[in-house]
Length: 194
Image (cartoon, rainbow, N blue to C red; front, side, top):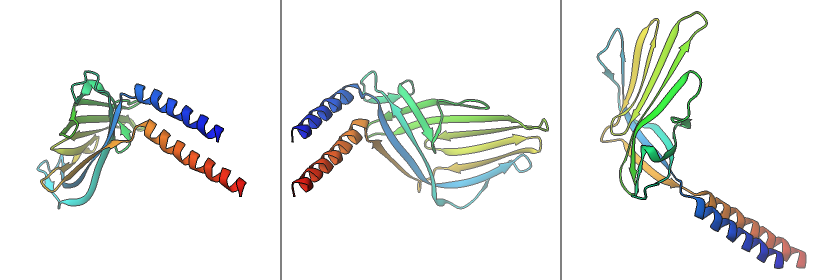
């Protein structure tokens, strides 16, 4: 029993230390349902398809409200990903950036994020793929190569659903793990007594 008390005290101290340092907050967001369109250099007028209610665009951002005004700005972002791909830390042939960002707890999320892959093939042909993501508008992919250009867009409509939720902080997971470990220790101790 003494060991369990020591373990609980240690975990409580660790939780306090983590919570005093944890200023960064994380959020998962998603848009579900888009209206697709397609255009090309031979047919620049967009052709629209049918609304796709199952198409999902999702991402995560981490931010630190340094000025304590309740609004996360682009300068306060520490991480921004879309479908698991970073838009703040790009290397190689890929360049990326988030040029507009704002989120208020319980309010609206606004962002614009872009990336470009500039690739030169072995045969010397250059291809460029640019993607853009904007709240209230949707996202697009534009490809340009020696054979021409084409673009795919997915537009947000009134049918598009938006969701955002907070990501559990590390100390939450730590305390959950500690609770499970404690239950296991108590169960093992009781089984030894029997």
